[in-house]
Amino acid sequence: VQLQASGGGLVQPGGSLRLSCTGSGFALEDYNIGWFRQAPGKGREGVACIREKETLSYYRDSVKGRFTISRDSAKNTVDLQMNNLRPEDTAVYYCAQDPVPCGPGRMGWPFGRWGQGTLVTVSS
Image 1 (tube, helix red, strand yellow):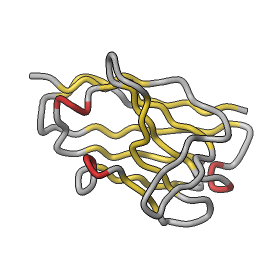
Image 2: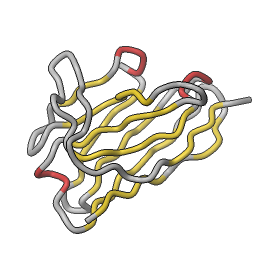
Image 3: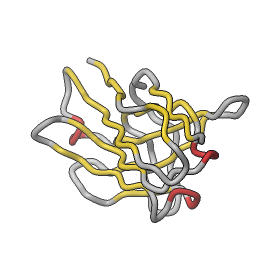
Image 4: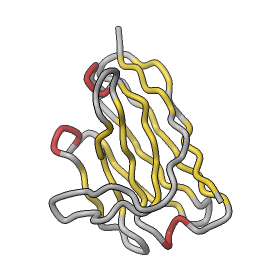
């Protein structure tokens, strides 16, 4: 039973990346799934989450309008589409199982598993 994050890379400011969180051994749709990030020298913070069996989602203010979280139950994935990336988005991104709460208004720490991180670097 594990989560695996993928899709990171180097992108110029204003560019886009799509991260994917793939589950094995359990159905992601049965849980809230969240994306977190940790920038160099900083603590880990919640970025976005999507609620179990729903499409309701939460985003931290700094990514609203730029990032979109979505679920593909057939593929057992939760993706994070990141557009208009900024240098301050540079971080290792992690997906995690069951952040509680997942909105409205805030995102909690996960009660379940963490995936390994994927590095996103936004730089010219």
